[in-house]
Length: 207
Image (spheres, rainbow, N blue to C red):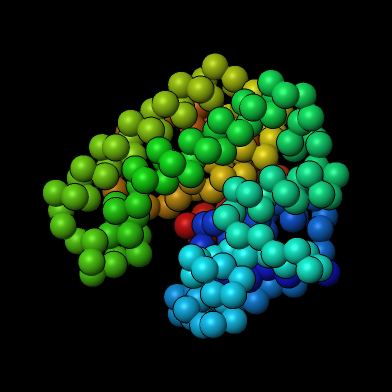
């Protein structure tokens, strides 16, 4: 059975869990990370020298990096409906998966840690405000894309890209600050919230 190492509060772990739910992949999960078993433990470092979650074990195969993992799962377990075989459709999904991991993640990191997680190391108000401006710019880009598609981030159907993007949108609404109205983003969250696999890993109580 597929094994997933990582704690549910991690947004990157939840990418993997949501993907498994969409693909009906049975799995066993172990809590690793801050507040649980330390990722600096030798047995974890032997699996991922970066000491970060998630990590999967699929038989003898070990893989880390959440986006690599969700792509692998879609390829390995019949996920063509989430991760199209057509080169252009797949590239469009990949574009938004990678954008979430780079531009979007970097934009919200300081503000989220300071406001939602209340990290003592992230309480510089100027840095929080700077992060909010950067985050808002990224979310405005997303809002424009969703206004164009009137459906999902990569087009008219749900794809693998909507898993990391959807979790980030949930985090946007779950972080306490005054945010602008982004109607297409709000409608998008309502849309993906209808999926049964969303609630356990992207509900409003989990940011």
